[in-house]
Image 1 (cartoon, rainbow, N blue to C red):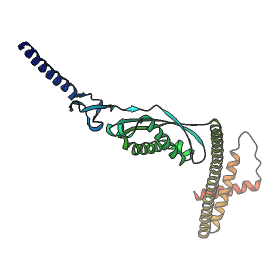
Image 2: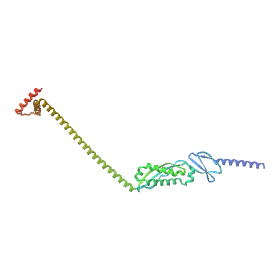
Image 3: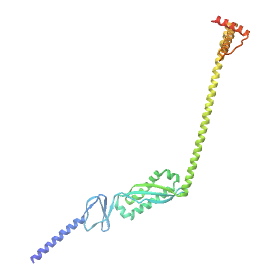
Image 4: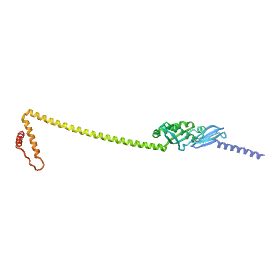
Length: 293
């Protein structure tokens, strides 16, 4: 009887020890840095365990969900959209997100990736439908920003943070692409013709400016020559007025000497026949010039 009592007492102690060990194992939870645990008590949300050592009530609390908080990337998706000018385009998008509040994610949405992909497709179609094709191609940065803002406001109720949303590519069908290429070539040809016409017009303007400048310079030279002749005439007239006939004869004699000097400077050997009257005039002029000297 004593042995049975002894063994019975040890069994109780062993059972208590086992119970304590199991309770510790069930009550202590070590959560990795990249995860969060959602704890339920009788099927109801109790709390969310963060990274590190956490304690829960054993046998009452259970870890219902282990959620990774690492950044995730949705598979690149393509969706068709129609622009405001009725052009069908195929848009490729990429989305990166993180689960920030697991208690919202696990209880408000079943398939996170599918929900985000569907939301992105709706936002893309809505935004592109309000823009023309030229705006879509030239304002991709603005369109990407709008998609990110709209998506962030929608998924906030799911406890998700959209880190990046990119518009990777905008593809056109072959017919639209060929029409745009033809339009682009026509625009290039038009610009080339305009540039050529502008060059010709500029050349004509420069030539006209050059001719005008030459005419102005020629007129200026003639005006200066006329002024010089007028000045010389005035000087002669003044000399005649002061000295009378003698001054006039002096000028005539000077001109005759200059004319005969030019004749004598002719190139080559030549004979110059000078009338006797001219020789008399030359002698008279020489005497007058000598007298002036």
